[in-house]
Image (cartoon, rainbow, N blue to C red; front, side, top):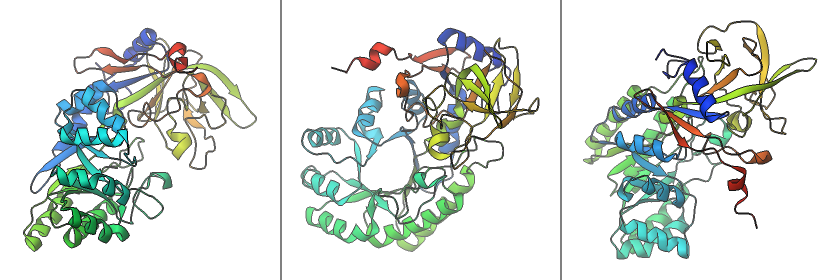
Length: 433
């Protein structure tokens, strides 16, 4: 099929219209070929003594996508017990899953954690309390643990996506290391895996600095570590003026530092990374339909049938997403931010929620911003790019009682396959009593 929208997808305008006719709008479409390409990019990252790539499934936890990504050779990074169980229900064995979570498992939840640890689940302790609660069981069963460390430095595309500095609370802070080592020594527990994640969309320079910082902490405190995770947060370029992380360059830097670490210590460390956004962000699209047009004294508004309840990232972070105007009959792409914009019409893309921030074109302070585009007609499609990550899993889809929208996979053989049904009102209400 002729390439549409941007250089990440092979779905075409006719395919957009066909999918919208079959499933209605709004609807997510994911490109299987693009997902596999991203998986291969990460698996090809240079390394010294071995590489494990874990998919951060919080980015997108659809069962079909988990199967595709796992089948490509990636393992799973889970952020909750329910994510662990969902990954296993997708056919992924527990020993291919790493749990790194803010949850504190006590009572029945702790018994469940212990059950899964016996089945091979990997566990990163992220606080002294988590360590104290699991220590006796891990010692009795000779289960090695990992630790997520809080390095005190971080980076992200916004303050709320910085998970490594002292304004965030993820992991065991360096000020608690001595106590953690005391507990581990008392229980004869070994930390074989050390993990750091400094933020989503991290500055590549700070990502490199984190490698050096993490290796220095391992040298000082973690004498049994065999695997080091540099986390995820690999920056993607959703917009044409953005620069994506260079996997080859970052991998080469990590490889050099790991080899130097071996020369200094005689210890060969395997590397792990845990990309989420990098794997799926630019492989997903949200297809919406223009349902109205309005104007004020200063702005034009294009109203679509999908907004913050299908993509909350502009509202939460001031994130920018490419927008494509596709003719309602699927005959053409009228304008695209990855190609030449046709026409001088400027408008804000707004949704149907009763919320002033329900716009897909906002600045970092939450103000609506008009974008140049071909003027759409009622019934045309507004396709929002870069929505494969942190959209279906993170948006407030029941706000205003709007239902969760369906998800469709554009397969490697050119088929459009439904992989999640549209939520019904009855399903939305079924737990209310």
